[in-house]
Length: 306
Picture: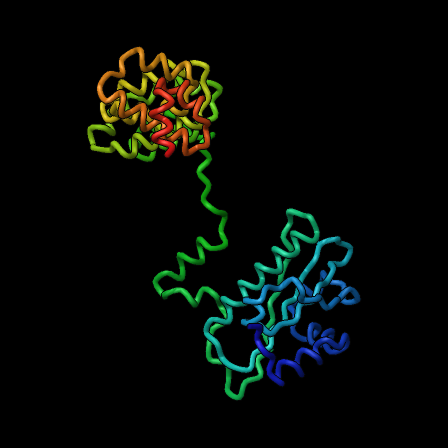
């Protein structure tokens, strides 16, 4: 349900919509730095059709766009009328400022953010009791950290600029980072061979699930013309048992899968075949192709399908 405006809101908004009223208000209250660069003749009251209903429930506002003198850029002046003291008003204003920027990007088809200057006209019975500094909403012992991080350049870890040697110093995250860094290699096999020792060390820490997750990702997304060699390299890991090998085999070409079986899947082979067949059926492969891939009789596959 959209917020119903109070008589105070309606009167203030209606009056501020008058060009002379808004111009005098801005001449009086805008900082000199903004007045020096803005073209007062370009002040334009914006429509509110793009504002989502949740935001409408929280803010009774007017939005003006202003062009810079001699510049194509835009400045938005956000005018809010408040008749009661609200500690979260700075946060609500911040949310609306972001919405204004987002709308500007969409309608102007640009990657440059507009300036948004928020102004609040308070008309309560008692002096306003709360801070207008959004950082005062953080706990006192976190305010300084919030100031340092919230609007500072964000921390980017660019893996293209981090060497594999440096990543090798960190077993858990480092192995993950190297996988993510090399997953688009034209041939994933050499990289996989290079991390076998790291995967073996992870095995010694009981990280079977973590290892299997990485291997599934590598097999499913990585590219190689030597799938059979990749298949055999995976089998060197003690934590990847025959059942898991069979499940991984669904990502491989059928002829590679069959050769992998011939090279040594003996223990639990039938159960593994059925698991693979189930997975392939769930993925939508037809009965004949499943039979050709797993070497299971069609009758047995039909039972699984039923």
